[in-house]
Length: 463
Image (cartoon, rainbow, N blue to C red; front, side):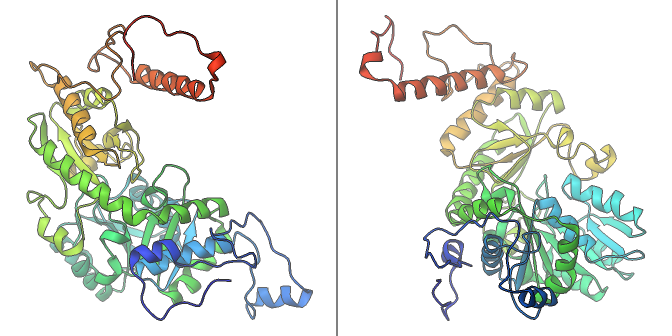
């Protein structure tokens, strides 16, 4: 069984490895994965008492599961929250936190700079149920003050925001919101609990997509909602129990294992992101760079006040709009085109045509999302390789410049036929196919016996 909890407050790195562990009678080292839909009772009386709530016993994995309970305890300890409930996805966490709390006739105030699906919930879904909604520019405290001149039930905001990394003054907004009768729900995905703890500034509820940094290796989906024990148990839990956005035990176990390295991955990704942001700011093809810890970020001082580091994401504008942005993305050889983020692999997306496609064009313009805006999630690759990849892609779209002489790390051997240039290629499938073929060849070599070997063909030896 697990050892008794220490009286001491554990530091984040220790919480991420050991928080919430419940060992079974087998005393396993790794957290157990309870792949079960239901649980049995010793007696009919125990079943009755369990449903009455007079005894603690797992009932059904939609309501709770030992593996999931370990994840929830670990996240609560890391966040400094009284309680946590997990969900199947990050958007299930956001929607559950909102819908569990509001009712017809209530009023919701939201920062304008939200992830596309969050924006849809506030702008489209809530009004269908008679819930009034109002958007404000998150950085403008005067707009927040005006919005709170009338009573409100809930506030939803992101800081830093997706995708342009706009910040909201948490302490100021939370104080005003509470005076108006609202709870404050903060989407803290970009910062993670290692870089920012919204509850320290007055937030009531914090939500995460555990898909991102928590797993951080592109494997599973998940979400989390954290808050005070009374709110979680009396408001959130009945909603989750009866509507069913349950996290699977397998996904919970995978996220648990991902958390063990969160304190190593996030700082390394932040260092890479800061270096990439500095490099991008020096390039003439880039119109603007947005990174909270750069001195030229309009809310640099607030970022330093609220965050421990600048984060793992960089936003920037490519001169030349969508056409130039697409050419740049297609010219990248290491960084993947993907709408995910917080991954060990660096990923880039064009928000106007992906994550924020369904946000009206006028609203995107107000958010600063142009046709040339890109969001880069910086991963764990060697930062020099990332900088060289970006530089070569910028060279490829820069008119009148000679492409970088430095070969791409995945460039074909010189003996191979010349490949189509990145600027000319309509897509990156040839590169992907070549990488896949190389991987297959490497696997074949791994299992090849000496008897299978044949003399090498004449010509230069590669790798």
